[in-house]
Image (cartoon, rainbow, N blue to C red; front, top):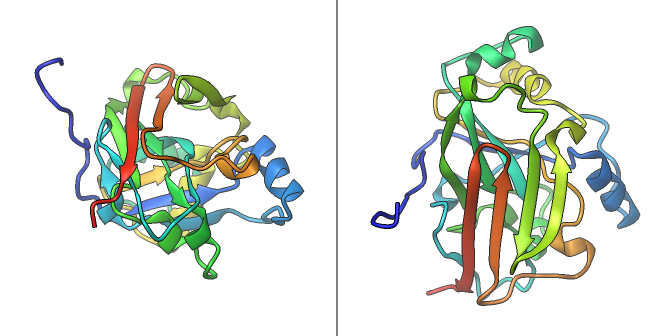
Length: 225
């Protein structure tokens, strides 16, 4: 491992989808900030050009002053599917990985959809590899942790999701065909940076870890325009 550099385990998925406000404590945090609690699943897409490796540098764009972190468990779809029932949803999962849904908050809230604020180049680090589904006994019983410069900022159990993974797959596959390699980011817990006015600065290092899946660690740098 010391002699190689890991790249993103999936470099060209057709879709990189993410659900917003999907942890109970984060929903409370958002409501306190004036964001209404969603009454259904809140999905948005990250353009796939944002995908970054598990240890690649993440750029702070010159046009954003509010780059934030979001620790997330990622799900990788394993086979082409549509209209998947909740009971059958696990059968379409290939495995899991660690995600940081890096977000330019000022761009996120400029338009009715979150896409621009979620899709800057390098703002989708994933990895460090795909842990196959058979190696994970219960994806809803994992500890999700984010450290900023060595300090714990986010920590929770994936069991705190409002909509669990199987419900997410059922909902999405009602709308669209899911393809092998598609990535679903399943939500972030409380204590995102915007809640405390903490935004990324050059030199900041963010590590996101999930029990049994490993970790990703990315340094934030000034964008090379």
